[in-house]
Image (cartoon, rainbow, N blue to C red; front, side, top):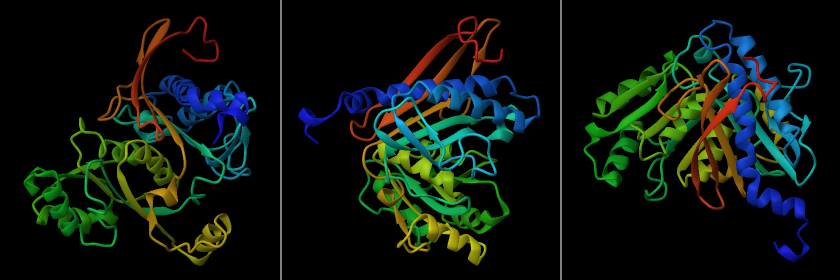
Length: 332
C-alpha cells in the first residue's frame, strides 16, 4: 500500500495501534482483578467487559466485534457485530475480556484479558462451538504436526525436529474427560502431559514461547478462543491447525451462515483463522506460565502484558504502573 495515498488515521494505526491495544487489555485486567479470589466469576467478567468497552472508546479505529461475548441478545456489550472505537481504519476485533473467569474467581493461575485486531474480513467468524486444535512454535519444518495424524506420530516428529528425546516433550491440554485418549496416547508415546483447568489461549501462546515449559498444545476447546490463539501464533510465527466440531445440524448451519461458501468441516490452517496484518495484546490477571498477575496496592497496581504484531514479529512484554487516583474508572 502506497504511503502517499494513505490517510493519516491508517498510518497511526499501522505504526502505533499494537501499543494502544495494551491499554485496552490493561483496563480489563485491572477491573477484573478486584474480583480475584472472591468466587464471583460473572462479576469479574462483567467488570472486564465494561472496562474494555470504555477503553476501546479511545482507540483510533472503526472496529467491529467478530469474536465477542455472544450475540446482541445474549450480551449487553462487546457482542458480535458491535461497533467500537473512536473512528479510523475499519478493523475486525476478537476479544475475550476475561479468559479464565473461573481462574480469576478462584485465584488460580493463567487468567488473562485478550484482544486481537485485523483488517476487515481477516478473522474466521467462529460460532461458539468446540474447535479441535494443534499448536507448535516457530523454527520448525512446515507441517511438522498434522491435526489428522495420530498424536504419537506428531510427538515423535516434533521431538526429532527439536533435537530432543521424546521424554523431554511436554504436551499441554485442557483437563477434560474428552481428552482421556489424547492424554493416554501422549504418555504411551513417552512424552509428558501438563493439564490445565481453563485458559487455552494462554496455553497456545506458551507453546510458541522458547521460555515456556510447553512444547505443543493439542485438544479441543472453544472456537472463539481458537481464533484468538491463532492471532497470537501468527505474531509469533508458530504453526496451528484446527477444525470446528459440531454437536448438531444447527451448529453446522450457523457456521456456514457466518462464513458463506466455506466448508464448515474443513481443516483450517493458520491463515484461515487469522490472515493479514494481525495485532494482539494480553494482560495477566493471575500469575501463570505466560504473564504475571496484577499486583494491587492501596492506591496503585502493576500490570504485566504481552503485545505483538505479525508484520514486524516483535514481542513486547510491558510492565505498567497505574495510579487509581487518576484512573477513576477502575474499581479499587
